Length: 168
Image (tube, rainbow, N blue to C red; front, top):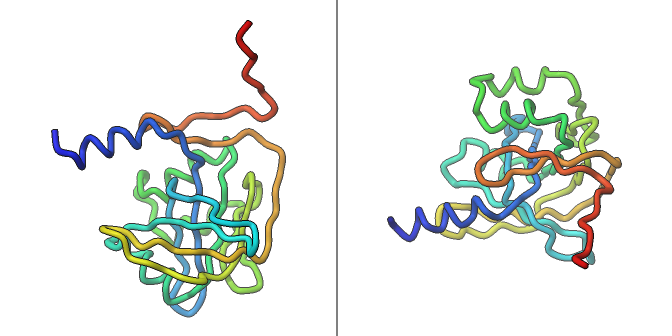
């Protein structure tokens, strides 16, 4: 087995939140499902998201310069599948599904998401096959709901307010 395949297998064991990353503007309106999203700093509030350079959305993200990270709630699994390209639904049709509205910058924001983080791309860097986008957050909305996670190549629900009990 190649190191690349071993790495992919290892990363499948890294539980991650499911996010739909969107942009809108002069270059177009697109979105992708991503798990490679991480906080960087709280001052200024910044996230990073990694996007494959072969993705058609990559260049549109760069040209528009604005993103919204929509952290999916458990009931948004089907929406996540659409934006992962798992259902064959065309991009323009995905944004016609219930729940989407445009913010003041014409970036799609998903109603009912666990969290939405809207902002501008402050920097990018190319690493291997991916572009790392740094998003400086300008607006945040959160809700208390169950989360949608991706673990071991499967979608899973993480219940809110459930604590792991301590060993005796």
